[in-house]
Amino acid sequence: MCGICGAIGNENQISTVVAGLKKLDYRGYDSSGVAYLQTPQNQLCVQKSVGSVKNLQKKLEKNAFSNVVIGHTRWATHGNVCEKNAHPHVSSSGRFAIVHNGIVENFESLKQRMSCDFYSDTDTEVFVNLIENQTGNTLQKLQKASTLIKGSFAVALLEVGIDKIFLAKRSSPLMVAFDHRGCVAASDISAFAGRFDCCWILNDNEFAVLEKDKVTFFDQKLKKISIKPIKIDEYDFAEENLQEDSFMLKEIKEQPVVLRNTYFKYFAEIQNLDWEKLKKFHAFHFVACGTAYHSCLMGARFLKQFCKKNATCDIASEFRYDNNIFVKNCLYIFVSQSGETADTIACANLVKQKGLPTMCVTNVPYCTLNNLADYVLPTFAGKEIAVASTKAYTAQVFTLLVFALRLANLDCQEILKKFVLNLQTTQDLDSVFKQIEKFKKIFFVGREQDFVTALEGALKLKEIAYIGCIGIAAGELKHGTLALVDDETLIVAISTQKSLKEKMESNMLEIKARGGKILLVSQFKHDIDVDFLIKLPDFEEFLMPIVSIIPLQHLALHFCQSLGYNPDKPRNLAKSVTVE
Image (tube, rainbow, N blue to C red):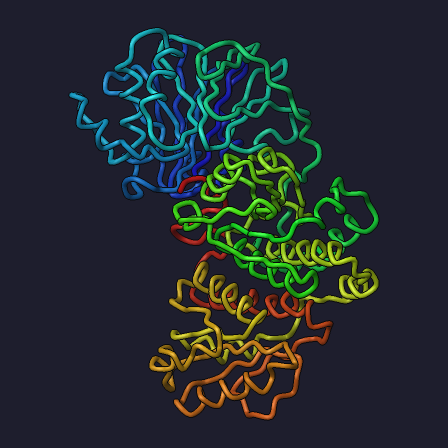
């Protein structure tokens, strides 16, 4: 979940690394830091700061210069947020410095076997001291320490007196680019934007040594290997020009454009998918986390509705440890915006080990899931910066809808075209939101597809406004949750399915009888008085989950900003979850 960046060359690399960290701080913004070899004294210098990379910049000396630099932006896993726990971490002798993305699961047992002093609460400080305790040259030390580590890591290592950066990778993303000016390593291709045309992505248990004029790659036994470069011009890395109050608002407003792009990509361009082969699968099993899991719930519904095939969903962190019954004629589908979600990748690896077919749905062309999967179903949301996903979610839902319709041989092209050309995200909802912002006990309810929207709507509000709310199936109200309803409770009732309209009205009457207040989100006129109303535009019923989530995204944003929080960087969260 953290971001690492390292650079070596003839120029001053401190600015290169700081610029890279700014592009990576969506991965974690609890703290940041850099370590560099200062010449001519050949000293190891470390500077850290709590908060964003901008805070680190203020602490760095303007005339600081180094040809060899590593940096880190942190999402805290081991140890609270403070400077002593910020990366880089230095070995007890001061000889080595390391930045690390991942988790050392056995750090406590390793720590007990060491006699050195520890100054932080992190697993990473154990890692760097473990490296120092090994025999051999620097690369050999790193390789030997890596074999003793249980868990995941992408690390960049410096040693005093050596103008090189040493890299190691397992289950966390790490890539390298170089040109005549030097070499850069990073957790994400975005750090290379504007300078490099291609990059090299390390596979698990591979190593690399960066020098000013070259990069050398090694396998897990330290045998030199070659890695095929990939072009990086297929993804939008342009600098963002923010003209809205937040990136979240910008991305909410971009959703009609995203859906149009997705429509034209799948109906005007050729996607390299063997549709006839995909149609032969008898069942589909989705695996994902968080918002992507909610899109999976919709994807499974679409496959059952249109293809009449069995489709199930699992949360990735549960699937990996469950007593799964694997089915041969089932396609396992893994969904992740970044394609780097650790739990989801672990599940994909598990399925691959069983020799079963896999497909991934991702928004990034070059990612771990794409490399693992037999089939790739891309979304076209473009770069999403706000931590709380909005346009990536609707892009996933729409892409899975297109997938199901194509498998079912249903010609809905004109319906979809009309939808993407007429969908709007702007409604005057401020007066409604101002009336409900006093509520602190909120439930989102719906049935069938609206239950999925309830889950996603509640997640958005939790993520950025820090309100303890839940999404539940409306029929489950009477099985426990109704005990919590009183006159200080707001129920956001989502009703977009005609066949379930009367059932939802019965649920709303149950709420009113207990004094609960109702915010109805629907395209229908209901035969019941509600306290607040968001009237939706009317499209085909299977498209309404996309329509209904948009005002709930706005609702979460309004609550967040009314409470004085930053919607783009919610506390305790990061955009890409690369640790379990």
